[in-house]
Length: 121
Length: 81
Image 1 (cartoon, rainbow over the protein chains, first blue to last red):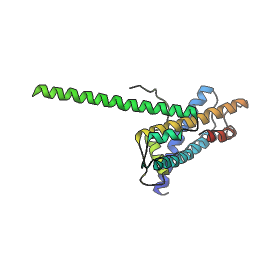
Image 2: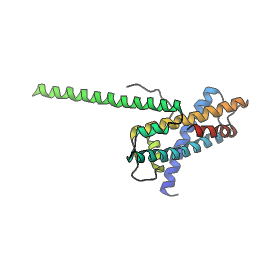
Image 3: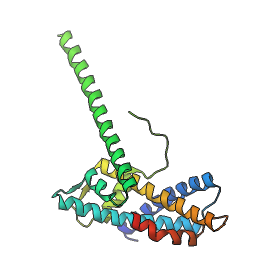
Image 4: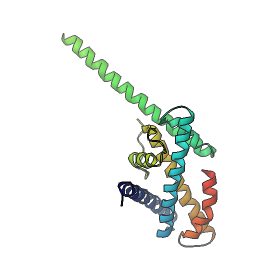
């Protein structure tokens, strides 16, 4: 098996694992198990859906004359369903807020450090 | 920072590697936040698949979610995404 095939197999296995866990949780909540065949099919479908996501994201980024896929591209990816679109936008906002909070914390630390050093001199 | 409860989901690194393997051009990269958002989308995709399949099984009075239940909901799922 080539290197590329090996890494694809590993990724497929990782996807399969998470799909299995999600199905297990859904099964528990509804007291209805998922057959192994369904989990395998779902994992395969999710894997293929990633291919579609990737190609779309790459096209969106290229259209915006960027080589790095951004959150804006992902928001566009979610356009077909209003609920999904809103969910992704909210999650994106949460991530932005986390970045802002982190920046404030670091700036605060730096200011405190600078003031300390000044008073020592 | 808001604490997220331990939700089952796809790892950022897995999603990054996965998407990168499907990009057609070498120069295409993925931002960290974008990877996290795609991980969310993938999780929602799988959850929808699971819940819809389970509801289909329920409507057919079946004890277990089988492949035919998944096959029946798949077309609409793909159209919705």
